[in-house]
Amino acid sequence: MLAVVHNGVIENFEPIKERLQARVRVSVGDRQRVIAHLIASRLKRAGGTGPGRLGLRAAGLGVQEALSQLQGTFGLAMLFRDYPT
Image (tube, rainbow, N blue to C red; front, side, top):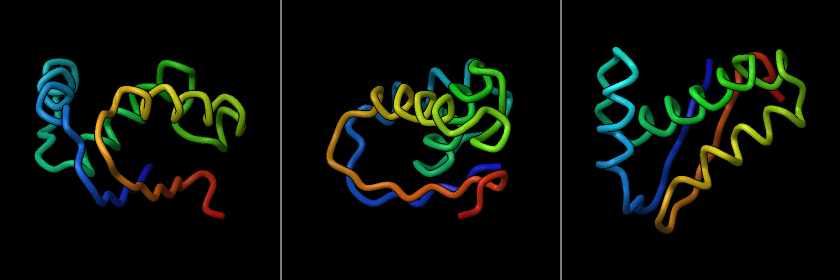
């Protein structure tokens, strides 16, 4: 489980949302959900659901890969259920 708080502008939000909706059978309506699904999809590809299952290094690389797809000026806060601190 991943919670995301977002502030700022993500310029390529719509294309990312459309791409995720084609793959994920979940309605992704707001930016926080889109970002959370994007990160979760990268973590799932790496073989886990968060830092607790992957290890911090692998999870960090998955998050970094997801965030590299976002364009704009923004700030994010993330909380993983498997790694609450």
